Image (cartoon, rainbow, N blue to C red):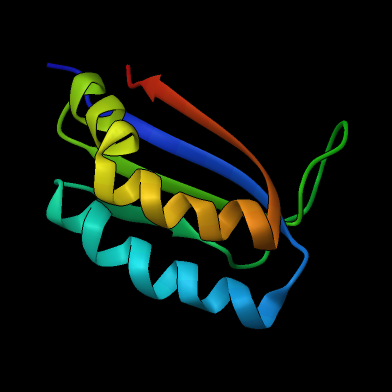
Length: 95
C-alpha cells in the first residue's frame, strides 16, 4: 500500500503565537500515525514562488493522511495556524 503525506507550505505571520500550534499539533499527528520527514529547515526556491517554511508528514496510507487532517482534535488546533500563518496544505499519495 502506498504511503500518504501531508505537505505544508507555510509563512508564519506571528512567530511567538505559532509556537503553540507546533507544540499542540505534534502529539496529535504523531498519535495518528504521522512521522515528520521535513519540518522547517533550510530551503531554497529553485523555480517559481513559495512560502517560507515547509513540512512533510508521512502516514501509513493516503487514507490515514486524510483522516489525520480531518481529525477533530487536529481541526481544533488548526485554528491556531489559521490565526498565525498563511499556508497551503496538500494531502498526497506516495508512489
